[in-house]
Amino acid sequence: MTPQHTTPVLKDLNIDNITANTIAINSQGSDARMQYLMERLVTHMHDFARETRLSTKEWMAALNFLVQVGQISSDVRHEFILLSDILGLSLLVDAIDHPKPPGATEGSLLGPFHTHEAESITDGESMSSDPKGEPCIVIGSVKDAQGNPISGVKVDIWETDSTGHYDVQYNERDGPDGRCYMHSDDNGTFWFKAIVPVPYPIPHDGPVGQLLKLLNRHPWRPSHMHFMLEKEGWDHLITAVYLRGDPYETSDAVFGVKESLIVEFTPADQSTAKQYNVAVGTKVLRQDFILVSKEEADALKDKNALEAMASLGRRMKLVDHLPVPDLD
Ligand code: BEZ
Ligand code: FE
Image (cartoon, protein in one colour):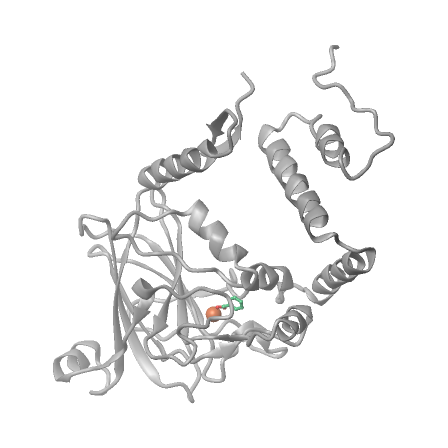
């Protein structure tokens, strides 16, 4: 069998030739995308070391930090997501992977507190059992860019309790709380009871918190409620709504806020209160979610990728909407 690649001679490696040789030895597999990811990762990591004149002591501190990030992680604590969030990577990856045309609901980061144990509720039920939270109702709709309703969309919703903690942050709990999922009806609508979101600090008692402290950054997120919308044929939307006027509106520790996602809860008037069977003055949020078809999202992603690749000065092609070097 003829070998596909020539194995490099791994000898006398130094500052100048280590990168090319590492890339070469990593290029023997058959997965073109994997090879491209590894090539760029090694290139940027090596450049980072050369550009910063990285010391052994600093690199060991970084590795030990990553060990701590792993050690504090568990089924219900994902410190690596937190790290990605505070480095701005989560938001960046979402923006690249789920581009939105004008008018579509923008995405926001997932965060580490989404779980798959939420229970299904129907219109008018409550997703929070917290008696201390300020009651509210959320009246949602799901539409396409032309304003047509989209029915049967699975809408996953999660928020903290009134003390700013997600259910999974409690060691002792009876089951899911502050989370639920629903499906949009034939008119593309859904509504549920919840509590008005409050600001809260991201978990900062671990290595990511120490890093924030070293960087003189606060750990707070502005008040928000998370939404995840999915239906076959539509681009998966992970987003959140943020309360206008929150003290952390412009300093979110994890960069999730976008002007188009800032909302206001308004007090229910007589007719709304009657229609939804809540007290007059109950806080109400009306929120439309505009989804992008999978086809349109893929086309936009392809266009953005090819534009970004043009500046790299090498021939690239797209496989499954992701760039790889074009070696043909
Ligand atoms: C959240 O909104 O749930 C969240 C996002 C990033 C880090 C921590 C929490
Ligand atoms: Fe959150």
